[in-house]
Image (cartoon, rainbow, N blue to C red):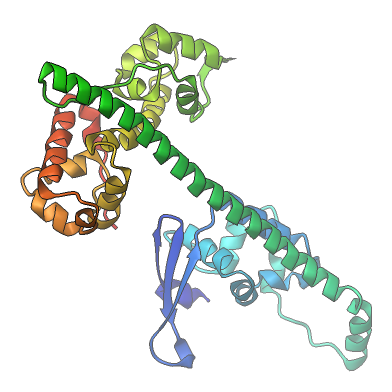
Length: 350
């Protein structure tokens, strides 16, 4: 097992793990698997469910070979969780590190060789329990994995809802900006919204545990302080100065910066959609096909929009041409020059 984990090639993209490992004695070549990557918290829930379904030496479902067969995604997520720790090279070590409060000694015990009489006694004793125990353990795995699947579905649904929300906001602001440009003959500019959205601000604040000395800082007090600075949504929070917010809210610089980091990440989605005239599908194509998912990414193509179109061929199928993409790239560059923080975010290269 130790050698297998060291030689396996495991990569991750979003919530998936792509695994390659040698076929070993079964022939040349590599086996390949693709499984969902499970979070640490979910792994703890799964392992605990299996562990408590059995007792003593009967917890065989947690043996590496059995676990790999019963739930490959649990097995490989466990491997991935500790893949960069050189001191953890076996599943046994993964389990004991993940949940050190449990007794894992059964994983290292050799099976005892019983006499025929002892084996018969044990068979009779366990005859009515084995099926129930195994079914309980498998049901525990199914229940937790089902919960994880539901959580994953909810995550994607929330992401889709967030994108739609960003698109609606972007379209509304784009139309307003387009009208202003037509009347005043001005160049395009990204307009920061001023609408009050306390839910956005509360979502940013919720990323930290805010304290003032030994007293819990009430969220309503923080919101009032932000409002006093004319900060009513996460777009305005993303553009603000950390020191100004720190003085107004009387919280640490680190906490304020974490609020702003979250606000900036959320704002980027809206901003790039606005730059692309509210074309959410085009933004998705740029991200998926050309690894261009941020404003900084887009600005880098300003002198070669034709190459960007070649890298994202689906744009042509959507009726988006080189000149339109050129305009988006120039807009991205203008936004970069206006807000320095936008330069800090780029699409990671896998």
